[in-house]
Image (cartoon, rainbow, N blue to C red; front, side):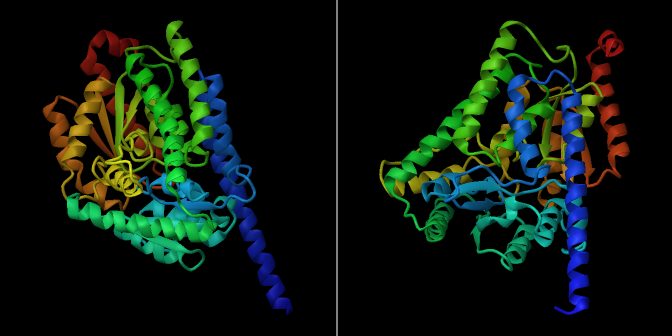
Length: 433
């Protein structure tokens, strides 16, 4: 090898090492801030450990050596199909600032930071979570996702999943056809056919996780302030990197601890803190600065309506009939009909869902999060604002990027919003806050 080539390779190695080191430090900072909130439950540790394993230790997801991983880029990818073909699904949407800074030079300037972070990890090739995937599944929910599918195709086999703009019967039929194509693609990668039995077993597996999630949400609704909302978001983010059965077991242990604390009335904060709901663009680990700022300012994130939160797993699969095709159709219906993603032309049920969550969690204020360049969520802000204000619920729009440079501005606006709700609740409570 020529001297110039050796020198270039050494420079690239040093660059990748600097990238890995900066990535590790950034992740450690946010894990430390989450723990510094205090009152961390003992059974939270498996979820923190999972996030640390992936982004600090730089390890792949835990799985049998013969099991292949399939990367997914949206909650609309039915995990059951991947499990049924003998593979492990991993969610690869990223909230990493260091990867974003690399992706900023790789993709279009006005692309959203989530896509830039994905492109950054793809370009650097340092994270086993990405590098070891045998297939990437990218739902086409916006123009940026369409472009990232093309970028990923340079390195991995990619299956673009075309999400329809409407949810009529004809749209469901097209989506069922696409899911059959996805099934054959995953089976080709794993060498294992999807059978009725394997698909039914996969439905049971994810059903266990959904049961524990429903239990978790019920506990949060009935006994407020048992854990910080930022910690709840870490739990949901960890599900991206854990087998559904392992996550369900960890959730079961966490739920047991929460129930014991509820019985003993051991809360992490006073009950009168402003109750905040987050909605809008996804909040993906380690980009948890907004929930951290809210709770460091004396608010409490009681509900998370983003797609990385509870709605990514809360809708169960209800088979339309007991045949194999019935199971496939039930997956398509679950992925489209209840989904409140703004990619759909008619998204009125998102408004219904938000109103329901405001009542269920006794929400006192809503923060509408918009990632810079995320037009599909930004477009819906006015509609959401009007509906919630008609209920007497104050709303604030916070736009953020994958950088620490906007933290102080976000802190000022978050603190002002929390203080406004405290004053609305009454001068005595505001003074005590």
